[in-house]
Image (cartoon, one colour):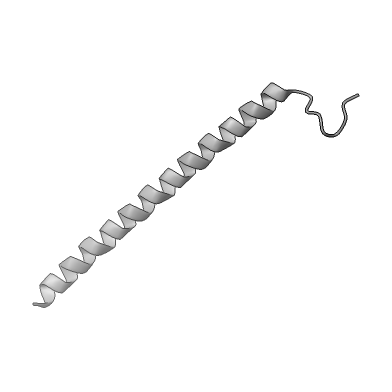
Length: 54
């Protein structure tokens, strides 16, 4: 039997960590781009509103 500190499949654990790291990077980039798009949308809307006030 395996002790609790030993992993039954060391290669599988490494693959899982790699997969989770990729998901983390993809998630970070998704939310970064999404946030930048929203900032651009609000900046554009703000300039349109203030241009009409003058």
